[in-house]
Image (tube, rainbow, N blue to C red; front, side):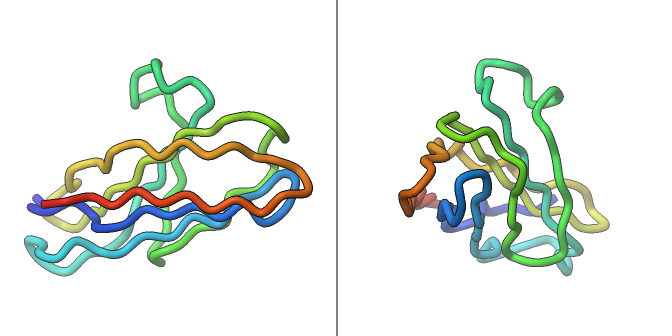
Length: 109
């Protein structure tokens, strides 16, 4: 498993219904990282299994077709042949039309 959490999770609202999410890879991993899973929801109280999930090989993802004025909660983790790494803390982001918003979550080891 990947031993260390991703260091920074950042979200930038860039349109009334989309957000660009970026992160940095873990400092240490058990083998080469093969991808990332980005989890998102408007219902953070729900089990992570019910959150929407997208996979990417990049350290960023552009979430689109989001609901304006809704608060989304984001989490991310890395994965490789050894399995999934730990999931980050959640980052709330409000999709505010007409405003550029930037939220950061710094994750300490």
